[in-house]
Length: 610
Image 1 (cartoon, rainbow, N blue to C red):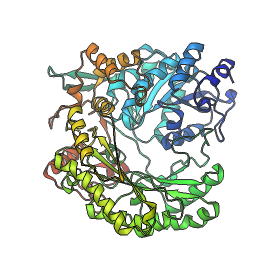
Image 2 (image 1 turned 90 degrees about the vertical axis):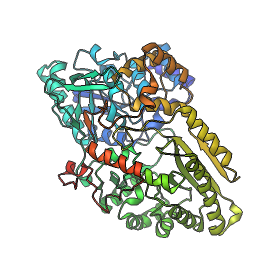
Image 3 (image 1 turned 180 degrees about the horizontal axis):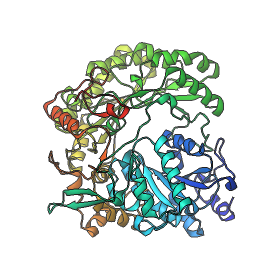
Image 4 (image 1 turned 120 degrees about the vertical axis):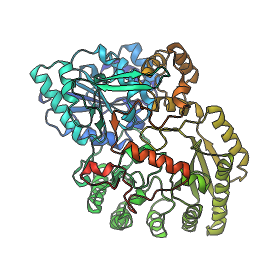
């Protein structure tokens, strides 16, 4: 360990975040390595190490001969202060080497509020912030992740974007970069070649023109770049890499357990859900392979908890059979199976009994809206009676804690819909009284609401966000209606969700705002402790940018979106059709009931019933 680092660690919280050396971390002989990759997560160790996608790509890259991928996380404020004071640049956990010496610096970005952390990590590494300031092939700064389906606010800082699932495209991109270095290409030559790879978006190869009213007038590709870049996906989940030999962290993390990915995609089509659209189509992993991965991962890591992880885990067709297959192993090894979030329309007694064999940690349902009218608008396809039946099943089986998640500010929402959330909570309380065999234990019902953020590539991408003042009014309305003592109400702060909406719907003119916020001290804006709305307001004013233009403005049907050069595989025509259905309160059946012609099946060579 570097002596300077050794001296500062006793002065910071959780020094284990910064020392590496965990079980299953990959260490390679530098003599045998020609390409070094800093895999950066723009948040703390505890958050980044809980990200399954990061663990997958870490394994994929380290399987490549001659390539060494190391993890890099954003330091907490105390550690950043000590690093800057001691002149310690940002370093890779595995080697402790400064990442400015690496060939590729890759960011995994799942949340728009992490954008300022990206700038801060580049600065901590001593790497120039803007792509135009970096002339050489190394370090190449790239990014991927869900937040990159609109990369425009951060486009000036990133050399290229990897869209979609990274298992295949990452290998192709790394090999192209190795070839470019061997053959002495310029950075411009490499970027032009990279833009010809499917799934790679090179922002500098696109010129953006604006109308007088501030909307996008045209997006013009140049130097052979495609007009539209379509995401990459894994076609066969049984052939996809899974991190069986996963890193066991040396300090507690958020998801400190085996995360078993059952499938990708979602059949449901909730109109607010960006992940539900951009991860399409659904691709299942076989039950036999899931079971084997569970056994192998627990045996290797020693974990005694497994989360069955997917966007909507209870939609995995052989879920009950998988639980039955794992039962002997779980019982003998005292391994607990858990599901992160459940569908209220398919939670059964059979599934509850299988989950109940482990610890009863409470169940989570996400009705999202307080009335059936609004649930139909968002295409949740869950009724109140289905939710109550699922709660009765859980309470009858001995559960006494239920979490319910809702959103405030959904399109067409009225005060009646807001008050409906309190009614749902009261009815769940009544279901407990009806069904619980042992009422002496009491019940814990937690209602949580978030501030709706309209996201790109969803049916609601044309909709405005309600104003922050209106959101806070609705929170107060619901607080006053929550009269049941056993119901706890938590609500999300509206300030960060407002900025999230600005960034999610933004364009390249926000790049100057991001840099201004960072220079004013915005380094970990995803954290309440470090977020400052005043700092953002000052930056918007200095840069002459009106945040309401991005967050609160309704888009026209034919308006060019800042992200229109990027395709998730779901067509714009389908999204607009879903938007019209939403406004009419018409639901769309799930993908297993009927193909609705979204376009995503064509990514796997199938047909779409457009």
